[in-house]
Length: 511
Image (cartoon, rainbow, N blue to C red; front, side, top):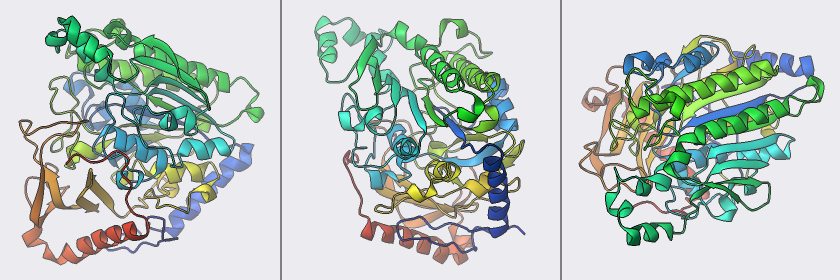
């Protein structure tokens, strides 16, 4: 019997863990599935996480985009049909907060990375316990490829937070190239003095390579021509990693975690030469979507060719919603607003999860799923759930039974929205109760690190039914006052968790 997430009770296993639903029949079926897998070969699953940059909820065909918006995505669509399509998968409002939350299972208010570090600013992962660190400790080979952007300081670099190897860049796409392109910065390109000024800013202008505990070594300076080749170079590196991990006999293979983060489709887009003009839209952003789809297809094909597909959990998502201010070089979402906001368009992202033979194919579900849930879920699948830290609050929820049960329901009751250090909204079921937001007029922008608009707090909360009103245009509160205690008590309990586990802000909010 289906449970109603609005009224169903959760349990809290300890005061440092987010409360969650316990669905006993679902849990039992998932355990049987997982026990059968472990018993058949004694292996733990590989994990491939493909994280796109600024790709919108509606860009892929499986979400209603694809050919309809000028960029067919046959490989991603095919992968979605082989597993679960999550229609309510959530990131944080901006790049770095999302990436740090994935790594730690913690909200930005807890890990402290409230906004992206720009132009060489430090991150704040030092002192945090990462998914890569815990998997590495349990015997996994850990590989990070592509965009990092959780800080350039040594302590926050991937090789020092649990990854055996890193091949990518530390910052964000536009910082490497916009000042080199006369279409965007003619006043810098055509000024020797200003060009030297940017060149002397304290951020690494190269993509780099590093191994665990070592220093980064520059591979190549990221000019505009180099930028157009990065996703291809990074795909080649990940493909070689997948092939290398398959070299031993199956019984002797070591489980691995590959965190593959693309450059695309963050502005400005310079697709690889073989994809220029390849999209029906004949636009660089859409051509880049075609390129990203091709990369996903090649990664999946390599897993199949090396006999690793049935042993690999694949998760494909984006770090936030579309960028509003770079239209038309921007992603597509059918929801309100965009990156940097807590409207649905800012945080609801694609989420495709497959594991052949373990996750039922061709299932679409609207159960709530936060990218932070990967922290708990992957550790559970790797049979090291006991390594989840107990000395800090973990906002992720173990969604193993949700994913492995064909008719699984989400184990998460609440989704919390934070706009840097301002609490914005709570979602439960189809309802979203909002107490603060950003304006979504692209003329209201001061944009530091992807945040658009100005913060506005409401004297009275607004309530949106996301099934009837996905654009969040019609507050329904006056008609639904019976719900208000449920929402306010959920918010109050969330705030209480910060009493024993106070916020951390190594990179402060914009104020």
